Length: 369
Image (cartoon, rainbow, N blue to C red; front, top):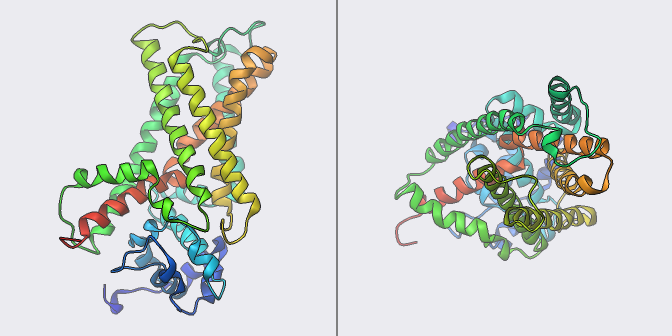
């Protein structure tokens, strides 16, 4: 892209600063960040160039820049920056702005991006929905003895809610992903098979291989690794549970030693461990772990709420009074709906954007490299 096509924006600079990227103004282009980054390719080092674009307000250029997503916020650059410009935090803020800009519908992107003030809405609406739905189904009357949570929330109601919600979230993510893919394609010619390059990228993400190159924030690798596989196992558990009930006609609730239940409990352990590592990194703070923003904290809080209420729901069936167990389950369903609804606009969307950027990187790479 030529200089004449670049459109600097004072509004972008102001928004970047308001979201936590104000330190970009300190950068004096010494290139220390690009020199120490183990992930930056020799023919396209980052984040020096991206810091310059952020300083000048070239938001449109940053939105279509794959390097923004190839960065894993190792923070090796941040701990060595002589000006404390915090390149890792700036790149993180840019990613949140990209997610908002590509959001479909756009108002949802704005809601989630401003989660510091909109979180009561993002959680309150799903909670009131479940209360209203259950009032209509059973008058919010709970059994004196709780044998299974289908006595509180019929499974048909869960299917009626989560199938459309997950379908709409997937459609919104598809629209945003296509926009992003097309933007990447406007920067460089690609060759080869998309799916042929997607498979090794997914393997690399599944093993968190690139995180292994990080030094300053090496512990982030295992926190993210545990969370990733915790969610994968949780999704598999939900799928197998639906199959067992609808096709195999398996009686519920499942015994604790049932393979599906064991898989679900494994996912709970992984989510708890991953969440604990992430929270620990946030608490110790500093340049090694990077700054926390409302955008990040809402997502982390929602994940923790889902994990904790999920564990309490399973234990509550045996240990809590039926009414208390029921309300814990309602809060758990609230967190689940909010997580699904905000998926295309939260840090969950990073998985899609980063994977696409990595596929583009492989397809745009010169032959023989």
